[in-house]
Image 1 (cartoon, helix red, strand yellow):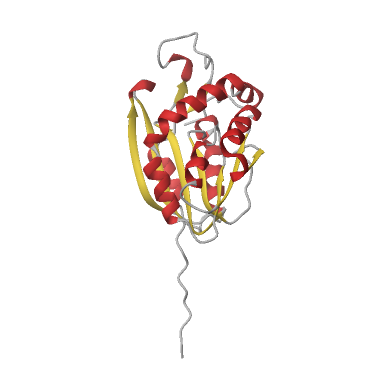
Image 2: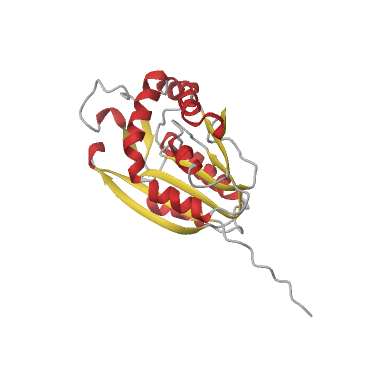
Length: 233
């Protein structure tokens, strides 16, 4: 399927301004109940001396919860200055935050990388490159936690509830098939991009009635630890 026309760049950054950031933070207060068990699982799987990166930190809710569960170093990035301001107000000195695009190449050795309902703002090709890049940037035993809107085709957010005055009017995004996301996560390091294959630890689908029956897909995947082959004599 050809990539759908996706709202990106300046239009996307403009959408996530101060008013949206405030509304998003209020929404996340309620949404956290849906993901606490997943985040606790991520915390339980972290390798020692881990750094956690939230590639689309938004209001900072995920990192704030993880700060109560682990002594890991916390980092976050977002394209929106307003979102970053909201996250800084919540996290204070608990995390290092910076302005950056989630699609940028990432170098590192992270204990966990998070991305919460943001890949629909990327074309399918860019989404695949991002997921593969995050897998490469994990330490041994590191964890990738991704949530996406599952399906095939495009999302027109302005029409899911029939309200054409919706502030998201005209915003276009991409649904991701579950099979595609799982394949991107688990493809082996023998592929031409050198990404390691991750192991799926948890995968769940939730029908969101308040979003017109859209399906939310949550996946926790882990980079395998390399077993030592050393022998004693």
